[in-house]
Image 1 (cartoon, each protein chain N blue to C red):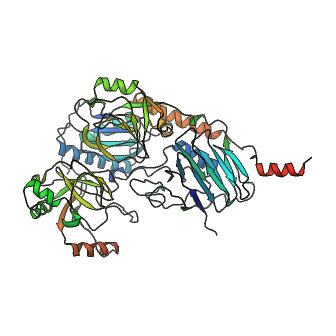
Image 2 (cartoon, each protein chain N blue to C red):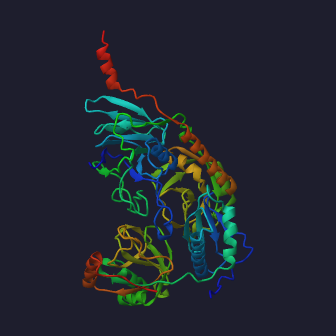
Image 3 (cartoon, one colour):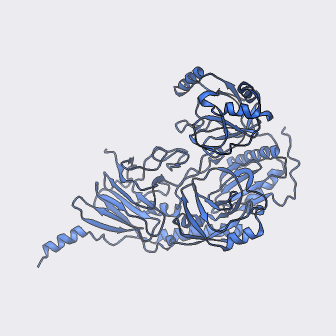
Length: 344
Length: 253
């Protein structure tokens, strides 16, 4: 059997291997990690026939070109507008929309340009990325230097192993799928939060400011956290707390008064006040925000947050049920050939 | 029989449960003295884990002890904060300090020189000799209060009061892996090269986190740790023997 691998001709600025993360080990300092947009990676996996927990490539900002040495189905998700550009050895190019799978012959070039409507997208490959498991997960946590490919972001020239495509179907008829309505991945700028756990350490004015003003995503953005620029949030006394645990979505406000939203690779404990927490179903859309874009917050109760989580999951499952066979790919190369044979 | 030690937990404390979104519940124990709160959080983690093992609790994804609270991360598709509070309240009423066997770990450390670049400055500031600092640092048995920041990083409390100092004004951009550093009443060992503002006094020859091991993490919260000094030759020998499996860290219970 030939070893399958995916080669990164251009890796992009911050591409990593991600799956659903290594939950359950934060008490020994191991970050949860995993896809920032779980819905998008799960959808990608479904489109290419993988189990939900299969590892894919998380792409930040775009600018990625890969090729695979065996024929595989691939899908780009987490975006509505960005596309896959598939190029053959003759330079013939096909543009494939996001949120559908497509069978790509061995060796063809697969390119994702600068992402247009999101900061984070996913490339799912049938079989899944085969980097080693650590605590049952293949996710990369670049700051902790664990998981994924050598514990780091993918670099130009890297070749990552692929697991066998369980469908083992290399004929022309690999099943392809698409979803018709990817609305769930449309950009948002309003995010729902539950106040706390240390909202009592802020002035009343700070809470009002936090919930009414518009913040901007700063360029200081990575998988650990998203720093925001905007109105200062004032502490009653200071920003220090006895160090405690952090969940993804926690909004930490250090002494400088500027909020930082902690994301999947956040440190497991921290010593700064947390004013609020972005609710779980809003984290995917949050991770789609680009530096310079607006972010606003509105408060909900714990009960509402839990209900919204269940509703988002229902919405996602409903979207998956609407997976349909896509129309045939318009292959520009074959159109040219068609033109040749019918030429006037 | 287990002893109940957390009687000071007030029954009607209105900040007992705090929210971390609709997916995290904080069990706050800051109505206890700080050292008791750390132990109580760890004890509650122990009780919750036992309940999970007996399948008496579902939907809990992770339990993260803090210095004065316990964070319970849950899956809102499976459970709710209200359900968890109902299960946790009776646990608090009966919380004991019996968290099973406590591990004692003897940790070799090569103090000073290239491995402890802050030792001399520390000696100056504290008005004692470098040897005094080393002697005081190894004399106390430390306790891992909490873990965090990086995989395997333990915050160990119980450093001799004579060594109390705030963190450096300007953190270093890069502290070498396995550096032993102190600040306030604590000692940390950096598992990986990382930025850090603590005073570096030595280095250990063994890994704190080894992804290739079945149990990748060496230290856990609640562990007791005593340091003992080794010279550079012993350091080099232990380092290579540890890699080949011929040196084992002493752990007793």
